[in-house]
Length: 473
Ligand code: CAO
Image 1 (cartoon, rainbow, N blue to C red):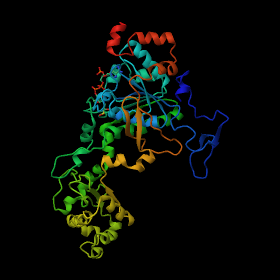
Image 2: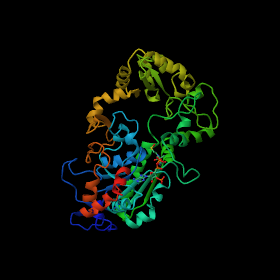
Image 3: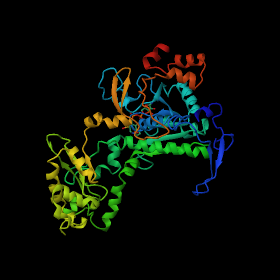
């Protein structure tokens, strides 16, 4: 797609059946809409390029939320050009540094498969490079503080005029409203999106979760918005703005808690432990400890080795359909028919007693033994896996979910590969770029600047760190 926009930024949409290769498929049988499709590939699956081949991304992201999005797009085959401030780059390059002189894991693990160009966006020659990038890219992705892009002169109107096909995708902390001008980080979003008020134990303070649902969660949402906008562009020929607010992304992931908020108007939440314990409900969804959000009673129980081993625990769910095998497994077969225990409703006030008995049993076994015994009779359980165990888990290495990457400065390190597996678009994980590593090739090969133009831009100091700028002046 980006290639097609090189000569003519506002070229006609490509979906019309113009080439001989295109055949019309009228899917009458299944009632699907009439669609124009390219001729079906006869190459083996996984050997005919990647899903987003030909899409070029102007990646103006930093920290975590935006880079998560553009890393996914890169794994799907997009050419992601990361624009960074000369001399500094994405601030995470130098945050939580573990190997002196090397880009941090914070940076490397969020910026695989990208190219890096350094450009001072507030310099006139830097602006010239950005304008060229806008003309040659399909999508601009950014997660600057509110107003920062406009202050660079890159308003929607300006970008849309330069390249009407460009999709402009943004992460912001809040959507339009009273907080729209606020800067936001992960935990701010977890709190403002309703997650923290519903996480933790009833008698303790609100808690944030370790999973980065504000940053990475919103990046994921944004990636879906971008891909959908690209799909719509095939029909309309024009770009659009895509906005994901972190508050909205977190709330979307916490929607079961807004569900429970509304259920409260009709009585207590009977599947919450607090109901069985006789503790009255207030007017907002309470924190529910480790109760399961799906309405099935669940708890985290000790296994052999706990509490000395902080991860010798298992998540145990007493789902109604597997109550009988649970009773057999823990040595309480009479609970299957005893009216005090036989039905989910009868069990609700006795969950503490029931889970204490199950825990007596789980404490005699390791979490993996519990997992094997339970899964043999279709009882779903969740061993609490430490990051050490996950890093060493060979099945995750085999699927490419945990990948070892080699980096020229830091050496080998582990990362999380693409969690979305596609049979015809196989992701390979390439190391993150060094700061400005691809500046020259992008100016020359992508933006087609001539040698004298490149020299002019470079000599202006627009692509280099402040000390070089001083020399150039
Ligand atoms: N050349 C020149 N200037 C550049 C530049 C470049 N290549 N790249 C960035 N800058 C400038 C910006 O223009 C901005 O300048 P102004 O304030 O003068 O307009 C400045 O760098 C700082 O950008 P910022 O405000 O986005 O960065 P920050 O560190 O102050 O704030 C953050 C960081 C994350 C709080 C803010 O960007 C934000 O709220 N983003 C939206 C929400 C988000 O994504 N948060 C998640 C981050 S991950 O936890």
